[in-house]
Amino acid sequence: ARQAAVASLVEAGAARSEVRAALAPAADLERLLARLSLGQGNARDLRALARTLTVAPAVAAALAKAAGEAGGLPERLEALSAALHGFEALATKLDGALVDEPPATVREGGLFRPGYDPRLDEVLALSTDGKRTLLELEQRERARTGIPSLKIRFNKIFGYYIEVTHAHREKVPPEYERRQTMKGSERYVTPELKAWEEKVLGAEERRKALEYELFEALRQEVVAEASRLRRLAAALAEIDVLAALAHTAAQRGWCRPVLDESRELQIEAGRHPVVEAALEASGGEPFVPNDVRLDEDAFLMILTGPNMAGKSTVMRQVALIALLAHVGSYVPARSCRLGLCDRIFTRVGASDDLARGQSTFMVEMTETARILNHATDRSLVILDEIGRGTSTWDGVSIAWAVAEHIHDHLRCRTLFATHYHELTDLAKERSGVVNYTVAVREWEGQIVFLRRLVPGAANRSYGIQVARLAGLPRAVLDRAAEVLANLEAGELDEVGRPALAHHRGEPPGKGQLTLFSVPRRESEAERLIAETDPDGLSPREALDLLYRLKALL
Image (tube, rainbow, N blue to C red; front, side):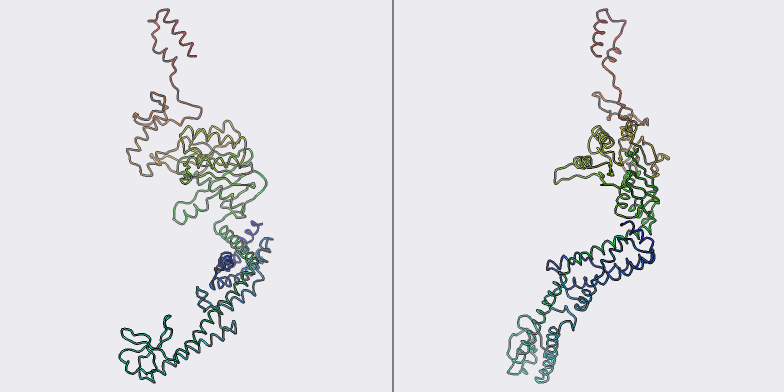
């Protein structure tokens, strides 16, 4: 249903733009309702709610236009459009009640438009008349006393008072009652001023109390509609998502995927949407699309290749394409056919959890265990370098066993990236395993990343070349090449461990050992034979040697 809705909006380009433009002024309706329901909202929240309610009919009108462009709306969009109606009265009331820019506090007044409530208008008129009277009183007292600098002021301690500078102190009438002496002036009150103050301040307090009362009534009216408003919020949010998906699909040339009940995953010219957009924004090299094909006969892909070649990008783009397809979106590919997945599992990246005392390897194994214990044959599994957090042989053993378990028991579509090239031998034993690698080329001692996914297995990781790109010192790179030569030659030290310490010069360039090809060690029997001079043995010594050799068998 969502996919059909997205497809309809993709086809209705002009109407889609109108839908997105109409949605732009909408506020976070669910957040506003939560604040108002908890009694924490203010008049600005109600004003934002009123603005959002006026969005609904505009969106409905744009959807109606989309229906005309696309020859009708899918059922899902029809239902969402129907949910946008019925809020006109509340929107009109809120808009007619509140000023355009209400203050943040609700206790100081200034929230409502004139004419909203007769009682408030009466109090406001009294307050306004009082301020006019104040100006008239100030002008009259200046004329009566002959003090041109006389001013009537207000503070929260004394209320209203008359201020006269010391230069005119002799002109102060006897009925003025001194309240405070300042550095350059005196402050007075009069019976007339105090009577006026009681009248005006009383009206001001009544206005604030009445405005708060009106605000609370309006808030309660909104809260009473919370259930309907939440449904409206959900409808607007879903329309917003569908329109955004349609806009992205149209702008970036995405395709409509085919979802079915098979266990296939067929992606032609798939792309990673985020990496592709980032490359375009930075003016970098164009993104290289790749095909990925898995089915019931070949469902476990072992993906090898050098660091930085793009293995993780390929796997993540497959996961993103599958996720986008399941939410109803178009996908970044030329074509896509995908059997429905019950879950998408990923084990990607490396991190520890110090708070829980878990090492990087423990976190990796915990996530892998969760996958093996919960995945089914309809799951999509993405595994990136299982076993890298421990020693080489432990790591390759765990990775091999995990891959075998997925193949033999889960039989789910899986992309398994690894630097353990030994795992490619699984394809010789398991029919559902296919080997792919990300192509690279060597040129003048450098590696060129082609970013293309091709059938086959990598035989080198090019780790030293990548380290050179990262800027490691030349001496470190040369020594790494010597150590690699020792390891690739299968040389052992005196206790049977791979020889790392001594220098060998230039690496011979031999391939990496397979899981079944271990370095050959000289046996004890061979040593005895090599050290024996047959011509120097007596018959008795020859017989003893024969018994010793037999015991070694």
